[in-house]
Length: 160
Image (cartoon, rainbow, N blue to C red):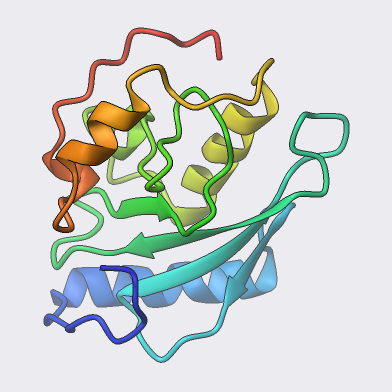
């Protein structure tokens, strides 16, 4: 789901408090290169990301959609790029991101800001603008709105 009218679920009290705290912190001290776009849904953030100077993505602007589960921060948010996604060996054309901290290596100590910084770092370290080698197969298998959190990712390349 990528529309702003996604069905809302009830957040746990912990999740609601944590998200409100992160939003206030973001407004006071946003991570460099990112802007939170205001919505009326605390469970879905849309974040504008600008590529870092001196990188392949310098001054390019993309949008991230962050969907928070009911039990955030104990469970990782779902983070995807909205169309068009950047060409990157770990970002699929449907916006799904192959980054371990979004799945197996998630920690409740992480925040939206730290996730954004990790994504910007991943983009900044890329040496080539290209889709993942299995992009077409993966995207075809993800039709009908499959979440990237349902994927069994293989984190084998940390050099890109």
